[in-house]
Image (cartoon, rainbow, N blue to C red; front, side, top):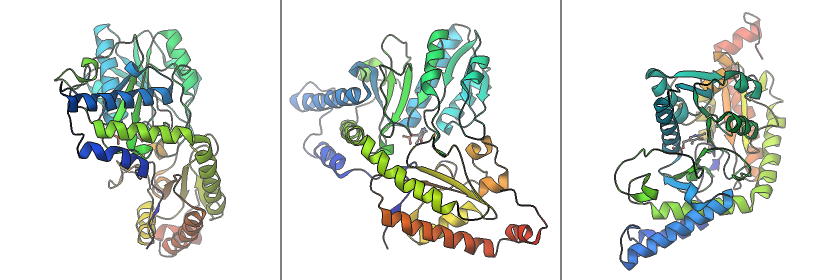
Length: 396
Ligand SMILES: *Cc1c(COP(=O)(O)O)cnc(C)c1O
């Protein structure tokens, strides 16, 4: 059976070029980048080359790139550093959105338990925060604004340029979780006035377990992982040279082909929307156009998303109902609830996220299978029978 992988917001397949670039570091180039001997210095050179390449893709300085173990660490580090700085200055207010990734939400909640006030900006039915709401929420006590670039479940793009501008004017630290955006959206850190930005390699065909925290020159950052003097004395731990080199190759590849890949993915994604919207009592979740070109998210009334995903899996199709982090729990996605879906509708959701490796045949087969399985699941859904008999009113 062919694997049709449509869970690229969860993780991506590593590109063959990335793997090729990484292999020497598992073999003869095993030096520790902090060692003085030639093997260590070779590793150091490769690491700094990777840092430079990543900086170039994002139009920032190499010394603004800090390597981490991935998106979660970058989010934890940025938020913790900003809150500690806020504490010292007597500022104990955080502004975030209601549908951040749990790496952000749970870190923010830790500070909320420790006495910080938190404003969770609403994201409305289209899944986009309003700049006006941010302006109204800012106070002299605000230590940090942390808002994602693109949502990981519904792909909606946030007005980060405007948010960054306002935060700069007000002198408030702005951190942006750009894990879903980097590699899919052009990001120019000279123009985008963020103070900190999180990146994860495995979301753009790089390896797992490596990421970046961008920190603008001149802004303060506190160490998060304590130990040796790596990463300009800010992030301890022997450098993951293979991972960083792989990430740099992946990012360069993604940036080089960004427009073409987006075009292709958008066309295939729109075909999914057009065809699957024909299923009666279905809805598209999140703004239809102001979203990542590879993100599809819909709800189908009267079914359980989990059932749909397991049956799609039996046909070789990898999909998701929410984020990988919340699947397995029976709670509906906090993202879908935040855009106003009721529990039943949120439960019947399907997320398909494409990559450059998907073909039109993959998409045609997926359309056929989703249509077939939704009908099959509805045929013995008690909830659906109630709708059909008129015992319950349709909600979509
Ligand atoms: C995947 C993801 C993360 C976590 O990144 P990891 O590298 O898996 O730790 C954080 N934020 C968003 C928006 C994500 O999609």
